[in-house]
Length: 121
Image (tube, rainbow, N blue to C red; front, side, top):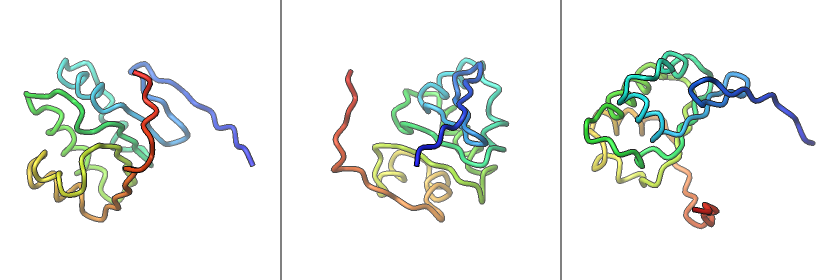
């Protein structure tokens, strides 16, 4: 059975599907670095937040890590789906311990190692 759901694109490029928000994390971090994104409150409140490609951002300032921690703090007991190339044991090496522990608490890791990459770049 196919279901057509309405997609709405917001001014900052996010795609909303019902009360779900989809974001490309490197793009979000770039927005945070320039101070051009006021979207973080919506990230706190939506029912399902999808952050794609976490860990691929270039962020020597650390603003992305700070915002990610804020998002995790405010989204406790809400669904957050993150796609990343960081394995379950690489989190403490990539991020601060408090962020890694918050992220991994009550989480489920799904490996897609055997799925082919269809990126055409």
